[in-house]
Length: 376
Figure (cartoon, rainbow, N blue to C red):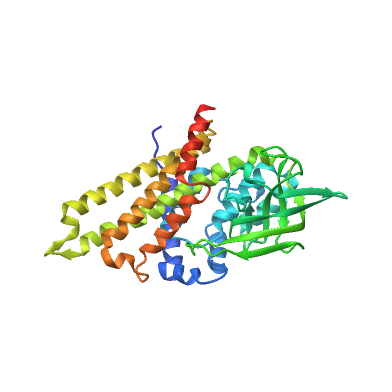
C-alpha cells in the first residue's frame, strides 16, 4: 500500500495542532492532573463547537461529521502529541463506536447526536477486575425482570468513568459464557444502584474509575447477544485510534530529545554531536517510523473495510506500544539527570506511554492475538 495524507487531511492536522498547542500546554496538563475531573469543560466545549472533533467519526445521519478512521487517527495523533486531557477516547471513540455497532436507529438518534455535540459524555464499561480485554472477561450479569433489564457486577479501569453522564455496559445473561449471551446496555450514571470509585493510577492525565452496578436499571442497546461480535470490533477500533495517539506522543518525545541534544553542551560541544547520542536518536527515529507505518496502515485498512483489519489493529497496537516506551525511556536518558525530575515534562509522556502500553492489552497480548487472527 502506498499511503500519503491528502491536502485536506494535512490542513485538518494543522488546525487541530494549532488548537491543541494553545489549549493543552504542559502547564495546563499539570493543573488538570490534580483535579478530580481531569479535563477542562471550556476546552471540551470548544473542541466540540469550534473544531467539531467530538463528532468527527460519527455518521452525518446522527449529527456527526462522518469522517473515517484516518481522520480520527490524525486527531488522536495530535492529541497524543499535546497530551490532551479530555474524555475523547472514552466517549467519542469507545462508547460511540459500541453504540453505532449494535443500537437501533431510534437509540442511535437519541445518543449519538448528543455525543457528537459534546453534550453527552459516555464511558465504555466492559473490562473487569480480571483485566481481560475480551468477551471471556465479562462476568457482569444482566437479568430481565418484569420487562426491565437490571445489571449486577463491577467494572474496573473505566476510562473517565468518574465524570461520564452514562455508560455503555457489557453484560451477559445468566448461564452464558464467552461471546454467547453478551449484550451492550445503556446505564445512566445517576441511576439507582450505580456507584463510582476513582482509581489511583500512575498516569493522572487519563482518569479511570471502578464502577459498580447493583441492580441498576439498564436499557438494552439493539438486540440481546449482539455484543458478542461487536465487542472485539470496538476494541480493534479503539486500539487503532490509540496506536495513532501513541505515535503522536512518541513524536513529541523525539522532538524534545533532539532539541535538547543540540542545546546541551558537554566538553565544549553539543551532546548531539557524540556518536552514542546520534545512534540513540537514529534508533528512536526508526522505532517511530515503523510505529507510524503500522498505525497509519491499520487506520487506512479500517477505512477500506479490509478483512485483515483485526490483525492490523493488533499489529499497530503492539508496534506503537513498544516504540512509545522505548522512545520515552531514551528521551529521559538523553536529558540526563534533569530527565528524572518532577519539574521536567518528560515524565508526563513516559507515564502516558506506560498506561497506553497496557490499555486494551499489552504488546504480548496483541502479538499473540495477531497470530491467532492470521491463522483463522
